[in-house]
Image: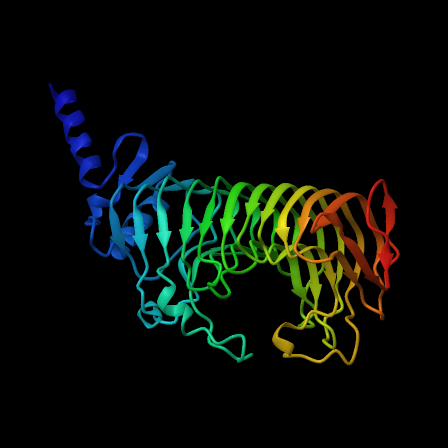
Length: 389
C-alpha cells in the first residue's frame, strides 16, 4: 500500500512540473496556448529542460502562436529537442522586437534538435519596405528569424522559416551542425533575406532542403571549414555563394566547401565566390568544389567575382587581396540566362590558382554559353566553354 501511494505521489509530482512520457514538456503546461504570446512559456520550459539530467523534448503542438524575441542559452545538462508543429508568428513591427538581431536564438548548447512540421513566420512584409540598404551603406539591421550560435552536434529537421525580416538563419561558431529537410520561403523581391548564412563554423551540412527567397540561398562568411550543401533546391534567390569576403582585416580563412546534387531554378546567380576590391582583407579561400548541378534559367550560372561591388558603394582602385585556389566546377548542366554562362574574374594582385572545369554543358537561347576569364588559367576536362579574356 505504501509503495502504491509513493508511486501515485511521484507521478503527480512529475505531471505538476510538466513532464509527460519520455521527458516531453508540452508548452501548454507553462501557459502557452494557441493565439497567445508564448515567449514566457517557452523560456520557462527551456529553463526546466536545461536543468534536467536526462534528455527532454519541448513540444509546441499544432495551432497559431505569437512570440517576441527569445534568446535561450546553455550549457545544459542533457540533450534538448524543441518540436514545433504549429505556426509561430513574429511581431510585424520591427520595433516590437526591441532591437534584437535575431528573433529565435539558441546559444552554447550541445546536442540541440529543432524538429517538427511547424513554421516560424517572421511576417517581414512591413519591414522589407523599411530596408534601404541598396542606397544606404549604413542601413539599419533588421531582425533575422534564427540565430544558432556556438552549438555542437545539433540538427534542424523539417522546420520552415517563412518571410524573415532579414536573413532567415545565421549560424555562428557551430560545430557538427546539420539542416535536413529544412525549408525557407520568402518572395523573390524580399531584400537581404539570405536563406542560411554560415560564419566561423566547422562541419555544417545543409541536406535535402528547399530554399526560395530574395537573396542568397546559402552564403558562407569567413572562418568556415568543411561545409556541405547537398540535395538542395534553390530558387528564387541569388544562388549559393562564398562571401562576400575581404571587407575587413579581421576575417579568417575559408577552406573546404562542397556543393553537390543541387538544382537552381530562376536564380540571379548559380554558384559564386565573391570578394571585395580595395579592402584590407587578405585571407585565403581554398578547396571549393561544385559538382553535379542543374541550372534552370540561371542568369549567371558560374562566377568568381573578385571585383564585387554591389550598388557601386565601393572603389575598384586596388585589386582584392584574397587568394583563391583549388576550385573545381564539374558536371554542371542546364540553361543560362546570359551569353556568358561562366565568368571567372580573379584578382590581378593574387590571381586564382588550381581552378578546374569539367563537363560544363550550359546553353543560352539554344546555343552553347561562353566563358569570360581574367587572371586565371583554368584546367579544362571534357566539354566546357573556352575562356575568353
